[in-house]
Image (cartoon, rainbow, N blue to C red; front, side, top):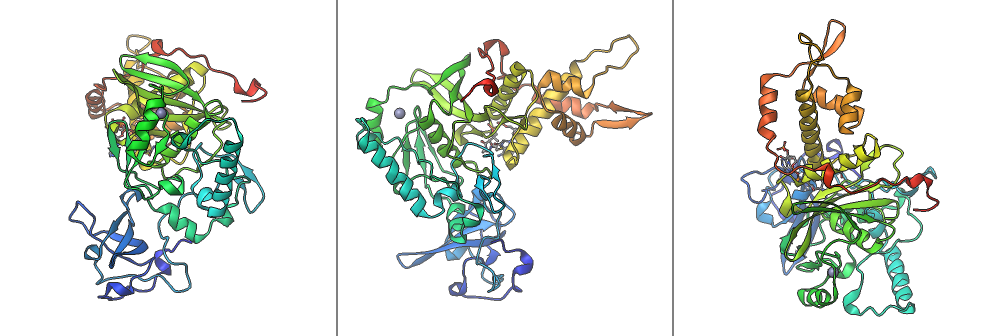
Length: 460
Ligand code: ACO
Ligand code: ZN
């Protein structure tokens, strides 16, 4: 349950941490800064006589949530939650289940192919039963898999749960980071959000993930044993693009289910706002890699519905943190539009976008549209260059709404003497050319891909 500020009793002077409970809001020292923003206590734990508080900074993204000790709490001004409301949870909780029959009995489509937090934690019984079922199936099957070769996938938990079944407790669990650290190839990465890895993986100092098949192990020894047997040096599926060291692999969520599910699980560590889903069948995954003498190393990916009724050309998109802010995000986005161009369609990313997703898309759209505007030539000598919104859409495969919102955001559209005109200021043009030196671009000549008409197929 969400606690709004108006639900909270007046702030109280409380000089003792002992009266603090989950749901209290107070200024907390944010690690690595000099700031004391307002934060909400999500959870409290006692370890060897010391208390630890898991806090969410109210006006900040959840990836900054952290465990702090009492020295970080300013107990002079505490807002206590009202007694008649559930404690905690003033933060935006993960989107409730969009899958399955809700209270009104309607079935809604998954919005993206990621495992569902709430669904998974929603009653460990469901999870345990599903895991047990899978283990039984494995034991029965002809599998030669050893302890080292669990495929690391949490199976579908049977019938979908309705949103109303998500209890407050589950909410708190899925709102807290549960994985300390992952090791992926040469990188150690601190997760940003909860991901429904199996219970035995949770709260280990580190999870070791094979960077090629994405299976996960409890410790380095287990991973080493796995690596002896794992022959993959690139993602499964077809390599549909290669230029210099950059490649893209297309993976069918139905044909490579284990890989797809492990990718979703990994991605969930850095994606918070998406509904999670077990069934990867309706999705394709485009994994971007960088090549070196050891193989094709995953840098990021995006997923895409095989058929989207809403013209989505991306469901989830991620650049792994060690590679962020180097232009790979825009390269992934550019690739997604290149696919749409090959399909002869316009497309748009699935909503909602995350804060970083919005930044990246806005920047990509602005850059791409400005490039077009600056390249058009006037028809006659004394004419002004002309282009229609539809032509921009056709040239870029960016959906009309996104073209219009970009032009509006950049403040480029004016209504003048009965028609819309676009005025490009010097500043805009200069800013654009400064950005232009984005070195790596998608080269459509290097894309070897024919779109499939999934609608025509009897089955994915
Ligand atoms: N702070 C400020 N600006 C940022 C940040 C940041 N932390 N990260 C990226 N940007 C800006 C960059 O400055 C750049 O803009 P510019 O070219 O105008 O300077 C733009 O965003 C894109 O930068 P890239 O380096 O190309 O993108 P990156 O490789 O960092 O990937 C992405 C962007 C994919 C959104 C990444 O941040 C990520 O994986 N985040 C976690 C998952 C996520 O939120 N995904 C999007 C969800 S929405 C959806 O799935 C449809
Ligand atoms: Zn492997």
